[in-house]
Length: 66
View: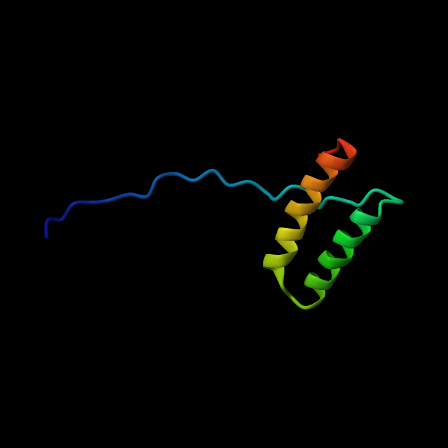
């Protein structure tokens, strides 16, 4: 094996976007927020992240918000 030096490509990382907040009075928002809180309470941060993605999609579709 030759002594070739390899390098990793640069990665551009950013902070996660702010946690989406439910719209008051929306039953679907409330359901998603409760599922997210439950996931946090048991330390399931993968599901927490999934719930944030789902809530952002719901906010965009149902409320026109991002």
